[in-house]
Length: 463
Image (cartoon, rainbow, N blue to C red):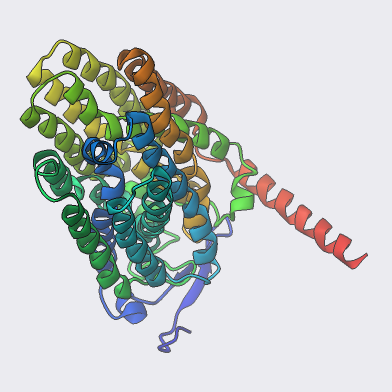
């Protein structure tokens, strides 16, 4: 029984997976589950500017504090380290009931607001690294890992475009601030603009945090028979992306071979994606393409990044997550190199076109990987499970931040762009050959190995 005494029952499918049915979203949280699309979407938009706005803000910040490009972009890499790193720990606390989603978003909002205060007063680089990058990374990471996995918990039977829609807010949510930084940040009061950013973003997160709520473990919508989903012609997504064979813990998941390759794939494609987020604006500036074109390219990248995510999620419902990865990663790899060629040729229209194409595929990993994780290993532990994959963003962040800044300082942009394109193409090949759905034998073997280890640990503790 639930807290409000609504009856439910649990059923098992042929793989032994449990489904909890009988409760509607209104029974659980007093409102329809669409609220758990809208609120996470807003949260993603509010938390993203720390990452997506940095490329546009970095030049002014570096000029204000007399920092080099490398010194400034340490902020970006340190930010990604903490933003991605907190995701796993948030998952552990969330799945164990130690950190409710509303409190994770609330804390995230406070930290995001504080980050801009520290950036406004970063007279020394370490103040920015600690206050903006580390605390801001923790704050936005709490929000991101909470929001992106909420959809799969509330929509386990049709999560493709919905996850993409929510995740898209992470990209285009920063567009107004990219425009602000690109057009006015050099001429308006430095501190006031940073204060304004912190108040809007942090305050908004604090306000919406109070309505977040997770469903019970194993919850399944009562109007969809979990044992007969294959017979429902409307559930196209489940036919191409069947439910996980069982709800698997993180330990069990990592006893199958797929997560290792998912992590490598994620590191590679994250490097390409974060390189685009951080350096398309500085690259356009270096190529003297003009302020309007540079802003159009950078904001267009972020906008199509956000728009592309729900489209990729929807497309993956029709062709499967794995095949979608193969195609969009290859497109991102080639378009990244084409952005370089267009910029060096000073071709304004092609720079914008290829930046839009790269942006439209750049965020696909942040949709397809959480979807694949829940499809392969279930929704109960998805925040923690995906957190171990999402940690690969740390490596990508170092390439998209300090490594690229160093490469640009040594030899200019061509090497950085080519490496980014190659990484995306390698990720496409990994997806093609190594990211197939776990077999029944792999799932059962993983469960046995973890159970045996637990038994051995208990036996040792009694000796």
